Length: 204
Image 1: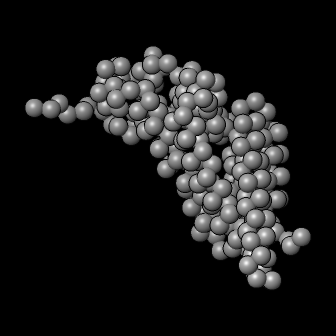
Image 2: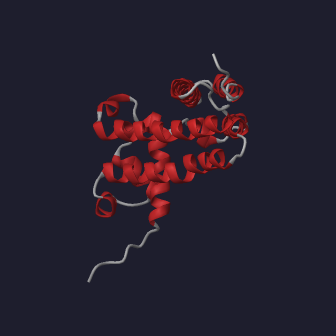
Image 3: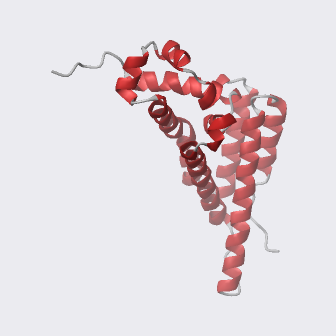
């Protein structure tokens, strides 16, 4: 008869998420994860298969509980620029308030530092995050973009311009979240700059 797990999986994943978020994937040793979760190595391996399995669960938790609620607010905003400003300002506000989770920056960007940045699965997770966030930014920008005049060529040009702006916004987000770990004031300033860069694109 299979033994019933005597722990809350969500709580364990959240505790491990905090370790990975603070230390990154490489530096998060099994003793760190054992102390944080209150579980022994065998219990963690039985539940998640490996350190990588626990990391994957932590990433999913981070996306579902931290990243996607903010992106959902961007998607729900009728005014795309306002939704994007709210997105960047909310992160800057949390940093200014000294929230510990935000001062750790981005879990995925932290995880990709060091040797794990060469790991194909870690790189794929970070790139999937980039795509998801950039697509949300693109959708918001397109809601505000004026219809292109001049047929397919003009429409393609407008689409390229919106994609460029979304890419730059993600770069500012990544910069701000990386700076959050070392220079909170500059991180806030970078995120505020991004918020001011969210207006509708003007034709060139």
